[in-house]
Each structure stands twice: as C-alpha cells, then as structure tokens.
Length: 172
Image 1: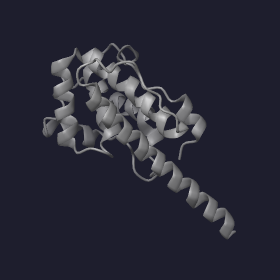
Image 2 (image 1 turned 180 degrees about the horizontal axis):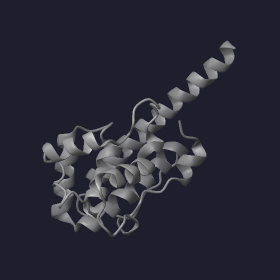
Image 3 (image 1 turned 60 degrees about the vertical axis):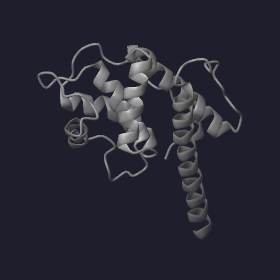
C-alpha cells in the first residue's frame, strides 16, 4: 500500500513523457507496470500483463499494435485503462476515450486526464478542493467526475489498509 507522501509526489506521465519510439509487448508491460503499480495493492496479482493488453485489443478497446510494436497512443490509453478499470467498466472507459478523442486531440485529451487525476488525488487525500481552471473545456466534467471517482476509491483503499494495519498492531 502506498503512503500519503507517495500519493502527494505521484505524477501521471504526460503525453511527451511516454517513449517516442515503438515498443514490444514486454517493454509495454514493464513501462506501464512501473506507472500504475502504486495503485495495485494485491501483491500476488500483477497489475499489467500481456494477456490483459491482448484482451483489450480483442475487445477493440484499443487499436492493435503495428508489426507487434506499440506506440505512444497505446501507452497513454492503456495507462488510462489500468487506472480506471477499478471504478469503471471497460465499455465506459472505451466510450470515454472515444468521446474525448472526438472533442480534443489525443495529446490534449490525455494530458487533461492526467491533470484532473492529479487534482482529484490532491482533493481526496488532503480534504481540500484542488480545482483546475478548465471549466470551459468541453468534456471536462466527465474527466473530472471519473478522476474523482478514481481518487476517492484510492482514498477508501488507503483508509481500509491503514485501519487493518492499526488493528493488526493492536492485536499483537
């Protein structure tokens, strides 16, 4: 389980942070796992696997790789999927990605998502509203609502884990 300090320091990788070269599946898994593992508390289960990614391709949630190589767009949307799958159905995630891709460039939509996730985490873990000045951006309410659902789910997991740890210490 993460600490409050780790949550405060957590930054989503922006569009330009993803590798600008095509990656093979094992590289994709490695890169994504490093970025999302903080939010996965089950140490037995891997947060990202090739089988999961292949299933998202089969379900047409993401586009297939080109010559078995994945591009920046794949990494960005897989990151979104791996963050949000605990709070939304894959269908809702897919519909959200498609909607935002129609409203904005892929780069802008993805970076908006990252900004809102970080803001929502700050709000959920500090108790203070951390609002961005983006209310005029089309689709921002959807992104904000999804981000807050994710952040408060993470906050609940943190509180459950903290309580369990406290109870385990008292039992000793």
